[in-house]
Length: 80
Image (cartoon, rainbow, N blue to C red; front, side, top):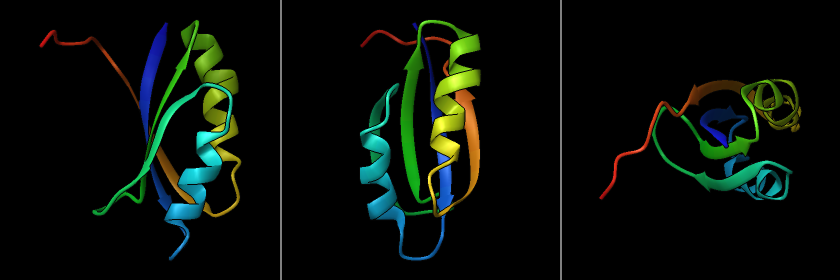
């Protein structure tokens, strides 16, 4: 499985609503609204990088109220 974090900026006051909407999308593993330069952080996953790029990330980007996204593919995990 290929995973990525998607850092999201939203319209003012919409972060919580958008985070809840994103949580229900296919391929979204977690969705949190946060403080700082980004409003929502989503962890997404797919069977391949191609699927992630062509299906999952575009479905996230199409949610109304999102103004900007930055997708950060996860290079590798670190064992605890």
